[in-house]
Image (cartoon, rainbow, N blue to C red; front, top):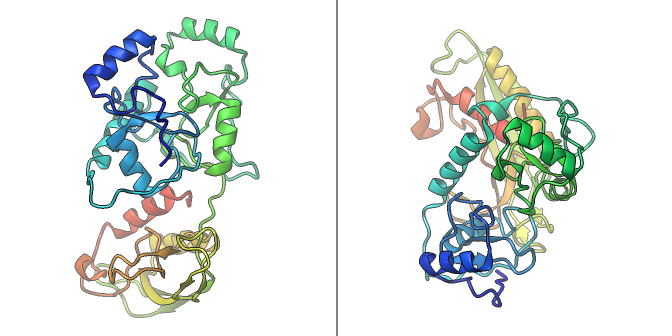
Length: 333
């Protein structure tokens, strides 16, 4: 990744880093890592956008996607194989979620209300009286409502919010130019990843067909079953895939749902996800370990009628609930 080598604090330990921060007048907000939401330890500065993070936090984040977590600017990242293994990202994300819920005054379910998709890449909360107030008016009203400095900072530019825009699902607030630019890269809230607009995946070409059979699934003995067949063709990877220009192999998969009301609901959601190219992707198979293959894209399917969860089958009483949440995480609801 690009690192600002001219920043004298990039690899300072926490104690030296804190001292130099005080000398330079760095405030608390600028000294926080937005991944773990704690004071930055062993700071690393991304050269293009100048956003700063703990070195372990940003290094592991880059293994998932080589973009700045704040502004989505692409970063040239070449991992140092075998040097360090960071395993703490889930803990960092958990801390970040707790921090956001605590400081934003949200309940854990606050970001889960459904809303209709619109043609615009994001919906704006037009009922928020401060949404387009100038900075001076907004600052005055913030003081009246007890809003603290940290809550009035834009998490993208790390500056006081100018021309505020409020995202309607999660209620996180940003400068209007900042969030509009971020949404051109990915239609999710940069803080909590709530989905806005219609997400499109990089699923390769293929077909999805549906049949109903009389045979029942364990746990759903009073209903027939839904049989879903996917026929995904092989081809050449595009710029949306890991190795553009390289061939990838196709696959054929069969999945099963109970033909009850909830099963039919899940089927409709899966059909919507397939239309938005979200069911499959091209990458490494977690089962075979092979590269450049068509594989599932984190929406779990039951590929066996029997055998329980260990065999990707039924009975599994919580499966339909889980898969609906996986679909919701991708904006399908």
